[in-house]
Image (tube, rainbow, N blue to C red; front, side):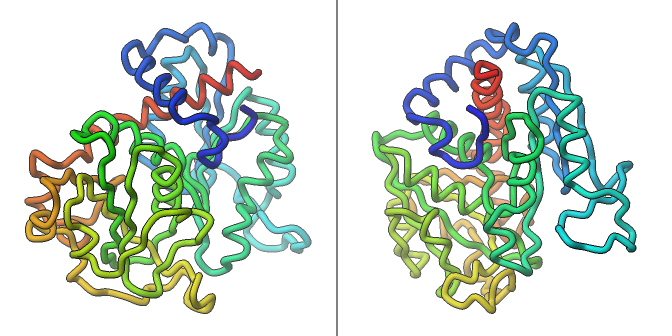
Length: 321
């Protein structure tokens, strides 16, 4: 596996899931694979779970780890071609990337959407430059449009906690005070749609439609209550306007309806549903205290499974070296 961005990069999901549970049962089983190998983790944006879980997974596999915070201690990087570099950016990404590749065997990249130019974001411009110029296998630690390590961990969590063979899983938009990328909901929709034993419903205000290439065959329901009825899992997440129906709205907050906040009443519409969120979460905006602190909240087990999803991805990349 030379790169990991989308669900299809992982191959058959049943095999990947079996591998995940094998690793969860023995996290150090494949420690020999990473001996004398180095992972470089490159962060253009802040991180807590991704940073810690990815580093832990690499260490479990016997790797050395280098962490580079581009905005803290490194030269400011220019990412655009053709720019006259007479501003505050001292180095171009096109020189920096192959240099980074000299010092490692694998590269993980975290780079968010700018939310101003949809074409630029959805082309995954920054990530694709790493894939093209680093000379190393590259995996996404959240990008402008996807967060596959999170979605893989979400699928593992659902498999562990489901009580019916084919659970109803609802991805629900919720309000937020800031414009956020669509990466997490895009990947969640993509992975749940690809899973053979998940009944996926997506609910959001009109105008917030995700890109069809991620939605796939999922059912979209604009009535949140109808979507929640009989649900086994509720996955709450805000995203800014994806600009699918109106490109001029891309990256904007075009709805602030607080009635979409997931509270006890919302959860009462479900089939004793479990609550999920990728974290960090704005309490009493995305979800109320009583819901996220309830016995049905899976946010901590979900976060813990980030170590497992990343272990599978890194293991496969090491095996392909």
